Image (tube, rainbow, N blue to C red; front, side):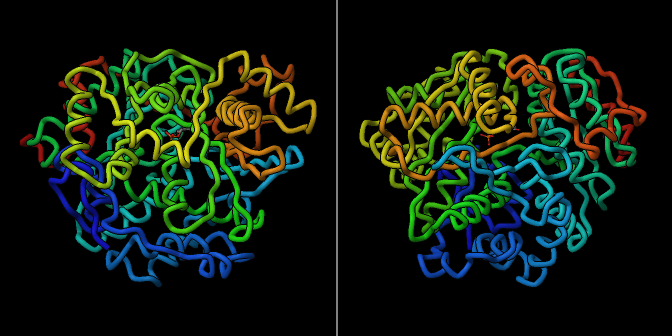
Length: 471
Ligand SMILES: *Cc1c(COP(=O)(O)O)cnc(C)c1O
């Protein structure tokens, strides 16, 4: 299996796409062809453990980069870190509405599902190549802790996480600063999340620094993260009658990684009726699906911070598909974006997206109401991200985009205890903190305050890794 760039200027193996993240031409890697499971292949997976389904879904994408037995061992180890063997259990909240809980990993948000795998894949490759990696990550909360948890104590990797000081929740900060392993470095940046992101971009832009430190990122455009996320679409649809019955999914969306993984599952043959793109007030995707105009408008802060984004990077992968894989047309649109902050999709491309996708935004009031109503009706507390998905599902049913009796699954992307204030405001009670999460509240913290300055971050990285001092 080989990968091509959405901008036509690069190709790679799975291993290369894993290590590079972004393609060298600025595009995103997608598989050269879609492997098909087919109805029979899907039916055979019914009732099998999560890790076995993961093997069948992921193996065709991995090609020769990992032997099947090696991948099987890695997957078993990866999903043993979850607190339930089901990994992604289903909960019914209405006759045709379900939640798939994706927060049973070590940091209580769905990013564990992919990052626990990616870190183990990195480790095998580095061991094989006797290589080293310096991982950098700017975070507004969830990604930083999931990346640290996945990488801590692993051979050949140093991780540097930049978070905006005073702008993440207490729990989120402690999840990052209480890792005691020497390969974990947490920088509290005296600035905003945008400062953290800018610094990370500037680190990569310094080619000499990036090459000498073997710099890499773990953001959601990494192909390996996407393919790991396709698995729970398959397991949850199977549990509710696929391949004989179609299901729809409501996906709380930021960077379009998770919902694009649903598209990957559909391309493999999973009968998905609808993919709901659920956004908060940062609604660039809702506007694009309504009008075709993809237009940056700045970010507003909401109660679902992991979805507070200005552009949805993985959307480029879908645009490439609906333009019939025309890389020069894709490149033209996305370079227009960096120049003018906007582009308009051709009408036929927007129509093709609309065949499978439907989008809805949720206001802060709608999110709070959904948390309160669902808690009252079912006893289940939703976190604000998941509630955005639940609101989108209600809207899709009202609009007839999903039929009244048709099965739909909301992706529950975070545990409510990660966002106690927002949940308490909405539902009038504070979620119980699971013991595994409570542990971080009392451990000693360790982080380095740094100014919002790339030069200062570079020298802090150099002195922390203490090798190739000539840099
Ligand atoms: C990252 C995140 C999302 C958004 O996922 P994307 O793949 O960026 O669309 C939703 N909910 C939570 C809790 C997250 O951490």
